[in-house]
Length: 107
Image (cartoon, rainbow, N blue to C red; front, top):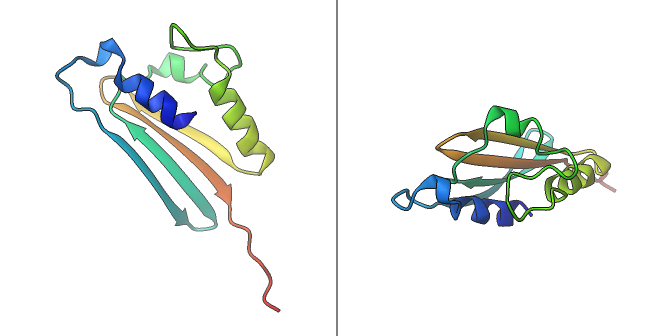
C-alpha cells in the first residue's frame, strides 16, 4: 500500500511534469526497532490532510477508497508497531513503519 501510494503521488498532476520523480525504499534497525521507510517526491500532503489520512474512508485521491493507510496502521498497532507520516507540500512524503525487535533467548 505504501509503495502504491508513493507511485500514485508521483503521477499526481499537481507535482508538475518537470519535477524529478524519485521513490526511495529503505530499512534499518534503530535501537530496539526495525524501520521500513518509503519516500516519494510527490506533491506532498498538507498538514490538515495529514491529520485525516489515517481515518477510515478519507482519501486525498479521486479514485481512492480511504482504507489502505488505516488498515496498514491497524496492522502495525496489532504487532506493537506503528506508522509515522511526514510530508511537505511541494517536496514529498515519507512513510515510516516500525516494529519492535524480537530478541530470542540464547540456549
